[in-house]
Image (cartoon, rainbow, N blue to C red; front, side):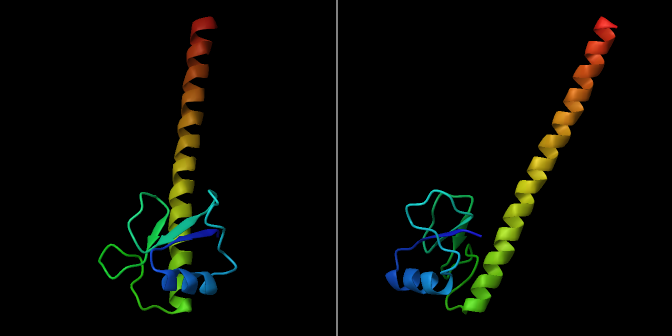
Length: 108
């Protein structure tokens, strides 16, 4: 799990980096699995930390609660991605079969 942290609150950002030091990638990196932020960002990988209804975790939180929520969030994102890949593979196999059958009928 690769995490990018992008917060307005310097205190929150430092705390997150301390809690998640083994997962954090540089802020300049474009390769990450989760983007943690304390404000809305246009990203499908956004893990929002605020005190609103849209957040994945509310402040205050413990390190254990944060890591648990992040693991669950990452697992859900990975499952969605795999489902889409499986569906695409299935459709590709189906169309390949149909094209092969069409080719056989026309040139057999």
